[in-house]
Length: 423
Image 1: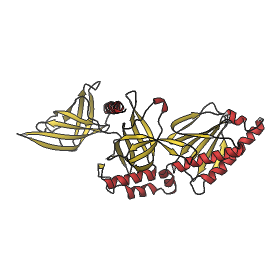
Image 2: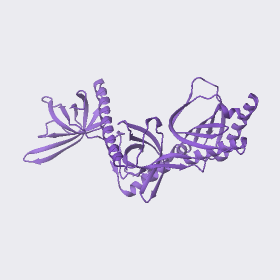
Image 3: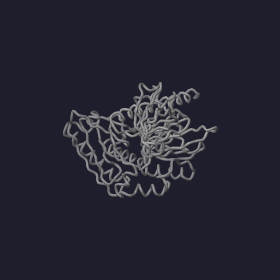
Image 4: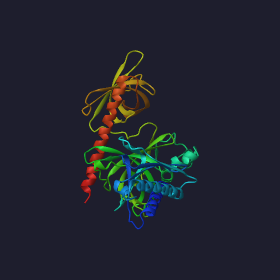
């Protein structure tokens, strides 16, 4: 539906231009943007109820307005006629039943208008007579259908996603992967990608799933992204990215690789730049985490303070992995009394990659003991962090910074490996 809506906006605005400037050749550029600020002397806003087009700002360049008439009155009349023609063409072009189109001119203001959102697109028609800009805020199919039927998304999820989604940790069965693929494309699902940059940092981008396809190289996923062009990101084939999206109360996390850049043709009007990804072979599901757990690059040690009836036990442990919401730990030797499932503990984290020791409260959510022979054993713990006071909140923020730093290091090293292997 996003493709059809962008095409409808482009066709409607181009037809209105052709009605005013006959035999004038026009070229069209399309871009997915994260945020766009604009201030123009002649700016109109079009809203379309009962359609996947929330609103579109229509901006006329100065020289385009000059070509609408010989004097100010003629120019104003020409712009009015253009807006009425645009309205009529939108009514005929939009993929919706009985859309209601309204438009208005906006009062000139020193404060710029701002377009922002996951599905914000800029269309620019260019010719020798001037430029026309259409800053558009769109709905996905899921959002549009849910406006008319609030149960639509739940019905699609019930059809395509696993029935026991509340209890499973991952999806990697081919049949289930196909169903997740259908869900993503049918809903035009919003996703968040983490992309390694040339500066060694990892940058977040929001995207919309447009289609899944199959070719000689296997299955691919085409996504439109709101990349910040100023970052200079170059998405090379083979580069590893991580992503996440939410559905049915779970966070679906995945890791995949770039196939290549691509374009989505908008009925001959122009093309929307896109990114093709290898369709993930696995989705990890989580109720809280939006990011993958990371394994510490340098050793992280933990000291557990375990309450007991006699006195507090102090236990040395090793951090196996860490996330925003918890940690995996191992304890060597005999399991101390009082340590078990649903026990509240206090954890002190130490390591060379931490600027200072961090103290945070935790609840034991996973607990298992593995015999090692000759009376030895290893205790595996899964802790969920508990934010009970200001110290816990401060430690949580620093743990998140640490996790993101480890993630950036991992992704940037992988991207350097890919770049070095690219001929």
